Length: 384
Image (cartoon, rainbow, N blue to C red; front, side):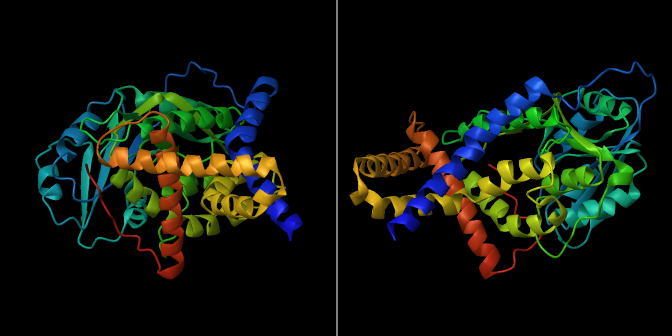
């Protein structure tokens, strides 16, 4: 029995360490010795027309400001197609106040969900490049140019921009979310050096129109994760452009917890859409998929395994005893951090452990929801 517990303990340790430490280190080594993709300016004068696709729901308070910002982007040829996904507020009416030939508003009577809307909008697009963003996002003026320039390389099928999460304006906002996205952006850049950035940022990514694969609509999926991998699946590069900047505001712990529950609920359906890339021997794409996402998605399961196996191994020696003490201390400190964040207080170290624990706890709740009940694809908007 102790042998099995030891295997579970060390297996959990190795997998967690691999996703958070060993995998990033391996990307650094690969980038030093072999870069499959390096952007080189071709000096071309022509540009592709870009179709910006946005699915909007209950956005009456901010949609006009955001769309006027999109229309001011520094790019010579683009259109904006917004699908209003059965909104019950004044989103469609507010959009009707904006008179610009580059804007097309498509109201849908029924709220179906983002993937349904994007499937419909892409059929209306006239651009050779499809760019995806969110209705609550601000884009840097030069974002379209920074994204489009990569398509001069015929190997590139898609480009992911950088999402910057601004510190929260209100007490209780979650500054740690901006740190998480900074880490994710660093990983995406290293993956992009190999031509295979794993997933996009829903706020800013673009693909060649002919590479669009309609989303499955039977369950909620992470569209900004599936579509980039579908591009890679078709033999193209999906790369990272840190100067293509999208800006969003950080929310609070409750809002982020709810968002990660939705992510957890989408994981199973998302993996089902990527069967061909799940072969562990499928090259760098499979290595990244397992290391960056699948193993990390498994951390909510690995943490209880680590804790319980350690608890039963305490009698096996001082090492397991001290590791158990450290684990128990981390959970207590995380609990203190959660209480602090819920009351608008950022406690050094405790807040970081709280964010880690809450994020993995939310994913676990999402997994349970996906198993117990079929997650809907409809919108669940949370605006702080």
